[in-house]
Length: 384
Image 1 (spheres, helix red, strand yellow):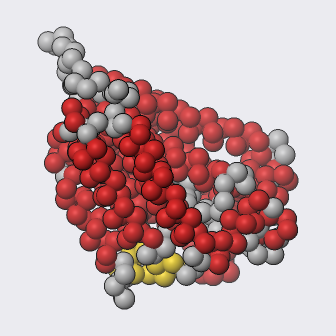
Image 2 (spheres, helix red, strand yellow):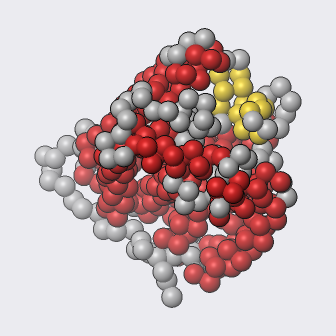
């Protein structure tokens, strides 16, 4: 039984009128929420990080300036990805994947890998730092879209549709676990599973992947005391208020004090050295405190528009590669949003993941802007 949500053959090509030019513009329905979120993110990064930046760097606007630069570079990346031929993106599947392996291996080389908080997740070149796991997520989506579109008629075959993709995920996961970065591995696994399910890989094969993965995940969780403590404290954070439950408690306190309309931008209290990583992993908590329920609803609405538009672009795509690519990019953004917000609201155990378009971080912002540009590129081809 084929569970594919995408036709096994390329959909018929719609013939435009002879005088109709190719679509020259941008998908406003996607561009608007992306730019709105980036704008809100710049403001909230400054509000969340000013006290920390002043203490650490002697300049309250340190993170603001860097995030503004990342946003401008992100716009350039978005424009490039909007106009680059999709055929070129398809042909770059293997080069991007190879680069991912090179970056993930290079991060373990002393002098290149940059350690922060006990984890080596960045490669540093002078003043520039780069997070390979973010690049790997984008590269994996491109490769899976290419591979699955080529094997569409054989995706139900265990040795063709499932095993090669599962083994590739396993190799990437091992390299990322060495950093360690469990959150990124979770997102990679969920994105891969989603793309294979949509593509038509047999459900029993996908369930097999869960049975194989769960014992490995559990072994990894209990292999380090701090990860085990996070898992235990997730069930009752108030019992571990000074260690494993500290982050969750202060995140909930931020939402609780925000009320409906919030304390106002800049007036939050938990960001003042109570809430860890307020400008990255827990920026949603700062939003909840300073913009209140109203701000949270607006943020959720903007993400909803992005996800809805991404799904629409995927279903309207003219060829399988473009459709799979849109599915993967949309899933990657949506899953990261769900995990980050789930952690901030104490619905999931604590993981170090940024909130797309909002959190501070150059690599994350650039690659999410690239994803938005590629989605607009696919949409433009749909309307051409």
